[in-house]
Length: 342
Image 1 (tube, rainbow, N blue to C red):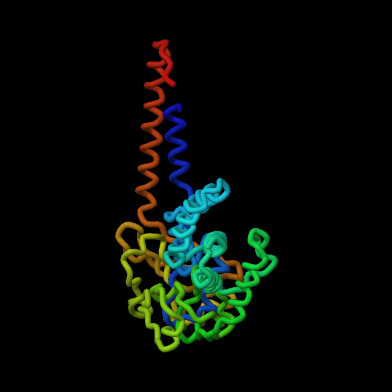
Image 2: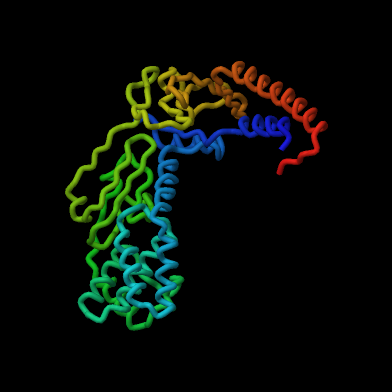
């Protein structure tokens, strides 16, 4: 590639927008106002809770679950049943190891059912069906994509076990009042209701928040019924003293805080011209930068202050000049030589 083109490409690439701005909410601001504000900003601004969820989903890739299920299937279809069962058992042993997405949960359920189908000992067969039922927390209905892959007697027995399970009411709102995303075995549950009905068993519970630290445990539901879960806020202080507590936040972190601090109406109640403030943090040294946001005639304009903008312009100009000089030098050498490099 021509050096000049390379430098131009580098400068264009380097000037592209960075990752989405990630917003943390202070503990005094209502969650409704927080989400309304993010919606008004657009898709390039996400809550810290959603950011954590994407990280959780990314973490599951290290287990290579898809490769394992393909390996097990290859053994199974080749008649190598024992080898297949060993891999299926390895998959089911990971059921509480991560916050699995929908497709991964289907792979784990499939592995439980294949193990149960191949098990000759009746108590062990039923125990595997019970584990399959508890893992999914829902009935294995005819519209399930794997329904026709298993013999009817096995599915009938699974349905009997599901109908006989004892359900417990888990008070999610009471347990996690500051967390907006709750995962049970990786499945995101709705928070519209104050409680959720789940079979009595042990589950991987993950609670994610934009204002408090996350919480993950593998625990029996009966244990949670007697607990009061407490997590620490992500921010420290109030108003102008507000700071992000956790130093491991290395992204574009911004704080949404109570606009009453500026003796104004809260952001979600503003009409016409108002000014509000948020705090941003430098990627390298977490220095606080005050960001001013103007609202006028319901058209929002966001002018974020950039640190050392002039310095970057000078560096960019220097790189471009160097590229041009280097390009001219190489072109002169190339014209006097017949060698071609690939």
